[in-house]
Amino acid sequence: MEMKNRHNSQESLSIKIPETGIVKEQSVDIDKEVIIIYGYNNSGKTSFLNVLNQVFYNQLMESFLLKKEGQLFVYIPTNRLVLSKAKTEDVKLKDLEEFLYYQRDAQKDYNLHLKRIRDSLLSNQAIGRAVLEAVKEIFDIEIVGTGGRYSDGIENVINIYLNIIWAMIWDRDLINLTEEEFEEQIAEKRVYVLIDEIEMFLHVNIQAKLIGNLRKNFRNCCFILTTHSPLLLTRYRHMAVYNIEDGMLHPIENELYYKDLDMVYEELFFVEELPEQVREVINYLGDVIISRKGDSQKINTLTQWLEEKYPNLYRKYHKIIVKANYVGEKSGIIKKDTGAGGAVPDEPGI
Image (tube, rainbow, N blue to C red; front, side, top):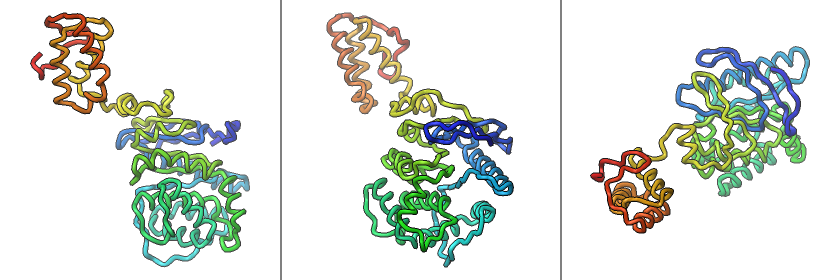
């Protein structure tokens, strides 16, 4: 792992990823404040994040042994929610080496880890208020405390926030940590935050706001996320998006910020926007409008079929339908015509 020049006040890293299982050997530039990785199931998203987590672990351990400054990181598997009922004590870590060992071992009993950091961090009033304020901003609801059991989505966000805060202040005395000191830490401390399937348990409206809120609250952090959500790929401007196939990252060069979701589904997730028959009808109607001539009987039959079989798509393309009908009526052409866009559907009998 080597440092590059600073980019938009963010440190830029070039990381060499070793071949491990499904993940192939490759180099990745972390030069954006948010990096999102998407792909099919079993394509290597979680495996890649695990390998990256190990790379950060090795680098930070080496920096500690050489008495150099390293890159703080935290790995958050968001599918872990059930909190342990065990009574816990504060996590007393004397140095960075113990912090690293604890992070590694916490994956074996992550529920206990969540309970520990909750019991520890939420004993500080400033941290408790910050978490409650984040929940209010993201979910637009007000909860009175963090000791209860809330929806999985709220619990997920609380866990994400507490893990990031813990990675920033693990070596601080929480009893004597003032609100000013806490705010300075979360504003200035840089942590590489790895989150697997960040959209887990979250309504799409919350997904749309989550990254922006995380960036606002932890403005010097870098977020490396995996997702199955097309929406997340379109709701933050300053990020890099990668598709992972067979353990290799492939950058998406297209501008995705607020891109039409139908296009994102079709171009990036290979989910067809329209059934093939509907696509043929819409193409035919478009050709009618462009050529300014068409078979009015055929146009009427196709649009009636579309309204009956696909009422939502009929409403979506209503302007095209109205224009095509107008052209058909004006041109006065009545003949058998398959249209420039190809064959029309068999279902309506044409």
